[in-house]
Image (cartoon, rainbow, N blue to C red; front, side, top):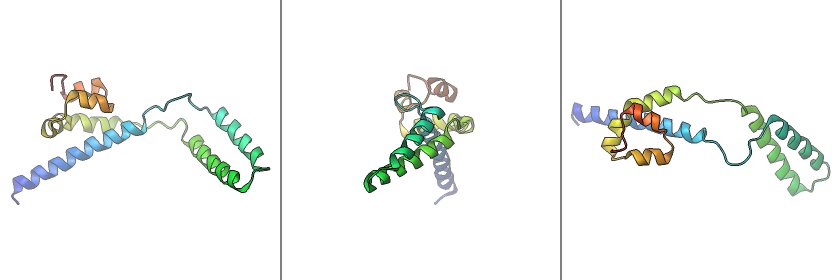
Length: 128
């Protein structure tokens, strides 16, 4: 392998990682459907689960205990915002060349959830 080829492979890996990390962050921060849960609604459901556990059959108890664990995890992560600024900056730096090399259009980026302002900063236009 030539040095140029190795450099091209490294560039592709680095750009791919920047794009992947940004898209994964977008996906994990995507708003969920339905009404948002509050601390109060989670606390109320946890109290209801504790009451139900007193008379639950073994299979229901199993399901309720798992629901309680899930709710406790949700309560801990409630309000924790992920700052994707650094990932966005990394994406912006490589998105144009990555798009050109992979043949990815503006519409495809928008369809997957990348904001139009981010694409504009990256230099990706609607005509691409």
